[in-house]
Image (cartoon, rainbow, N blue to C red):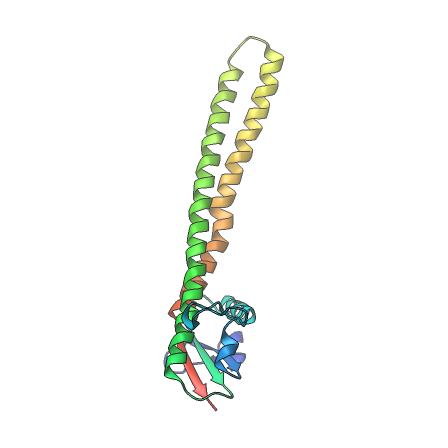
Length: 187
């Protein structure tokens, strides 16, 4: 009996316990975007390969390590191309990791601004509540500022605690793909 439902669909390395994501390709060029003509180690990965790696990485528990195993069907072993592919995969996901970090920093800055606006609205609202001049107008403005303060505060907490969870998960998965062992097998 299998210990885990995913063990039915993935090969698990019996020694390390790592999940092996198997990718079958005809040749080396299938790894990279055919429209990108730059040098191999800085070429963009094929969109379907990127989507495939991300999808299966998210499927497997982030506490488990993964290995990428490329089954090359119509190719002879070329150590230099293997290095280029490994470098290309790591560069691509390092870039995605960098973008997620940048997005995280921007989200935190945005949350800080929202918190400051919320505090400012709350202070002005409190001040208006204790003033006696033009009471109806002040009550209306005070109420709107109070609601606005809570809305900004809610949005800040939403960004900090709810939306950042998804970013943090993506960072873990990208980091895991970057650190994954990459194996080539030839037929």
